[in-house]
Length: 408
Image (cartoon, rainbow, N blue to C red; front, side):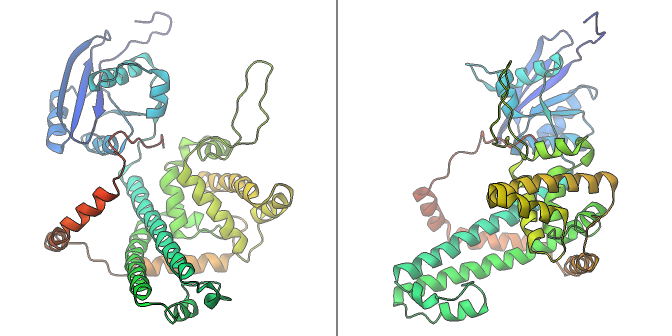
């Protein structure tokens, strides 16, 4: 016991979670290891764990895809959880010898010592919002890839001049001209393949838009953020998903710092850094704040953020001005969510139209995939398993077992 502070370490359980197995280390009140064991990372095994370990024992684990899934199951069981930032744990307790048992013990010891760099554990509804937003982002990346392939096909055919004067190749007039290009048989086949891919991706996007609308329609915080010109329900859901509970951020500056929108500090003694590079942060939140700035520029309503961007862009250029304006917008977001009040410079007609669209899309019928339908899809993929396996071997992906997520 620390006589000065009166603090006594409590027993705790450290978990080193992987996709297939989890290693647990139980520390007694004296900080000594009482038990180390490994079990499958399954719901049934986690249920057994909650029955074995005293309900008052804190459980500590690192943030990762598997770790967050385990945390969800344990929270449902009513356990006290503490999630650590992997990056910060590595900095605090770097070791030349790394095993699952050592990693689980390290987490437990850091918690007992009061040095655990904890991060946010989002509730299920916030986690769901993050998941759908990331699926929607993934579609965007794929659409850009396919469109770039079409541009490259036209260039290889020396037909860019035929598309001159067309600002959007994939709008109505652009597509009509695109499909009438004098392409050879092989190029026509490739173009048709790319266009079918775009059609499929667009269909998936429509499904995700309905999911996003259904997540947003009953949330007051989403509707409040939609009062900002340039912020639709997709952007609002993304912002809420990354921020979570606004009470995590006591000031507007802490939110801007979390988003990586404040200058990095490198001060020591008499030396004070003066560089303008921003600190690392939540890249998804930063991306959507920057995107919202561009949306505000396109909106009819004149706002302080728009005026700030225009002034700064003349001084430091458009790219840096966008980040600076995103920092200003993050303060607006913090104020709206903290005070539960709409944006004071909103365009009320635009806000009404956005809310009407949200209500309309949320009411569109959705049919959850049944077990039978999923089995049928699986059978279709099974018929192409050899082809998919060959493609995967030709373009292997890096291992993801130790891929860690941020501390958000």
